[in-house]
Length: 264
Picture 1: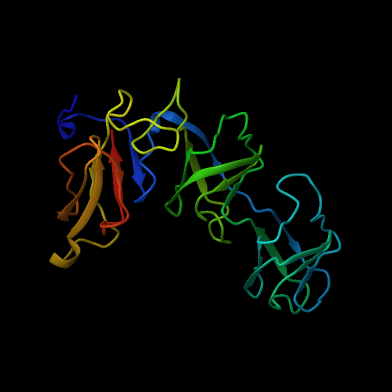
Picture 2: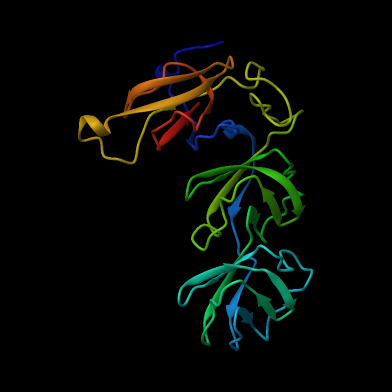
């Protein structure tokens, strides 16, 4: 049943990334934590227009996360520049639509899009499944697992690890499976409703990155879905305040605050 959580010495908190489709994950059902990886990196060995050439590369290998695939983004971290792979010519040559390598030696980094790669974790053994929620905790972003490609690669619903500054961010994955240790959140992919016994909701602390020094930077709007399924916007919430009801989701539409915290 509901109770005034602000009077309780709670023990769990989680950054909130507003989303119109993804609920706030339950911190009790964390499936995996880790740090993302690139697909490959190295130094080019010769210059060919609109190509990356590395005679020591093995881009057609089948050891995950290889092979390199069309759509992977290659970053020249020396110049810098980047382009998406348009063709894998061979194990040692990739093609692009632009000429991002014009000298040698230049360093490169290959990053998979809409994916999470971690060669130190076995996602299958961890029980990660489609529908589970993934948080980028360094550059706050949220996505769901679209597919478990292999033991060290997931396809995601959003590109939250797809750049040269986010591919190696820390992540947390939260279970959304039904049965046993599960959290069938309101509107979750695998069913369940907000009023189920294992979803009591959380308190939302209103914060923002802007220093609250003027009237203009003290008040923000927050749109939430409550445990009962209602969607409501709280207008002009003051930074440092708490919303007076239990929530299962903060909506991106209608929310202007950007440093929200869920508290259980």
